[in-house]
Length: 445
Image 1 (cartoon, rainbow, N blue to C red):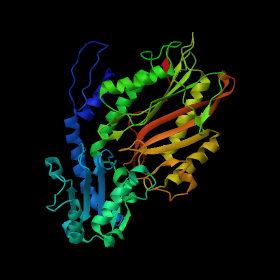
Image 2: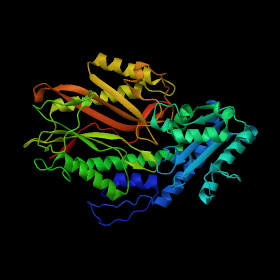
Image 3: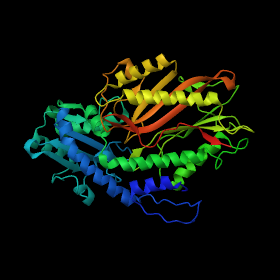
């Protein structure tokens, strides 16, 4: 992958990998070797050990005596790679049991039907006649007052237990234990929304990588005005993911705004462009893209302007549109503090935008082990208070995702969406971007 020197330095620092110069001189490029699969496993399992250290206080905060995660062959529970070593599991039904054992602390059992060395580093096994007997033994030994399961949540990762596995647990543990079943959703949310200090620089490297891929996609390396179609850019992004050996958690999307062309909408947002749309001079381009690596996910939106013949810069009206979005970002950062509810932050931001006469939408969401992760989202939904407002948690990651609409004189007063999405982490003084936000459009000459 061709990166500028600063990006390479960030990646090397964060990922602690080696690289070699292949072409010296002012146009020097450096292929970056991301960690191999085995190196990734070692790194993620070091994080897992730290997560397990944090689990018992979480269980006690949520009144959980026992937590059971069930993984089924061909139907993996999305929690498995976060509570157990992130390795393939091919047992018909594998169980991971966490128990508050009082003075003994946290006891962890893997009921997988076989003993495996890497699992044994994190879990105890139980000599029993099978999983059902092992569950019965554990219940009798520890008598947990509550048994938390992946049911009853509002998000897929908090309601991932299948009906058959629920029946299996109820039969194995018996009616008395079944009466103690409860939803693990609040525990799951805190567990997944708690970021580790050890993850931060690796995540920053992932954001840098995302930025560099998007910069290339929105450049003459990929876009040739009058030749390149939207689908060509999307396909290039897919192929670059494959070449880098990383994944994504959603389809890369592109939007095109053009003078004199009405903006089609979808669910209140600017609609994604069709793949056959031909990119022309004077177009305003937008990319929504994310990378998945090390069990973490980015979410990133940036915009580019295709210069017309004779143009050397972006029209002033489009610059003002992006400046309005920067003002919206500033308001969100300023209003956010640990412990403040997402609803309060949203309302403060929108009040400031109203005072400034800026048409704004805010739909920011947590990031981390999922792209649309669990935690406090700062968006129009949080202000409805249909659910209990959630406090912002220090150290959490977020995609500061939002847009403004601005009338552009050079486009005969046509309204233009200036959209942004930047990963950030919460400090005591508000959100901090992992890399500098976009304050000027990428230019495609």
